[in-house]
Length: 190
Image (cartoon, rainbow, N blue to C red; front, top):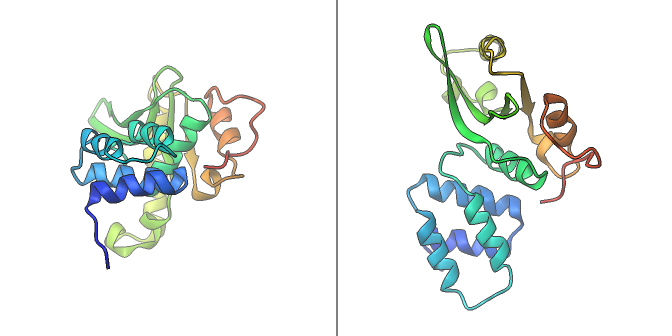
């Protein structure tokens, strides 16, 4: 069995697999401490030219701030829809101090985008002693607090179904106030 280090493996995936799988791996290795310069150096050391430009663009998009595979895919989809680069893991504060940290913030549009996976509802290790119902109620309260902030015009929630190719991310994001081209009705293939 051949075993490669994180950097080599990430570049292999970026060169050989679809953008969705590649961005998930690239974000994950950045979170584990590999830096972009090391990924670019590994990419440049390869003799192949095939897939290099796409891999370089994915390395540029990748970010250690992305916290989950769903966020990775949502970030990729928003890039592919031509949206401006959002602020990642933006913190909002209210009169009482810290209010929430959101997945994506588009300050020029006043739009928060959150990726909703199911782990926080189903995995007891994540939700602790809370029931799934408790988690839903807390999320609702948090979102209501965000919507009350003067700088927030809307909150969009994306799910796995939305960000998969053929999904409904474009209309969800458009309704929230983001400049998604009207001609795009379904999530593009990645």
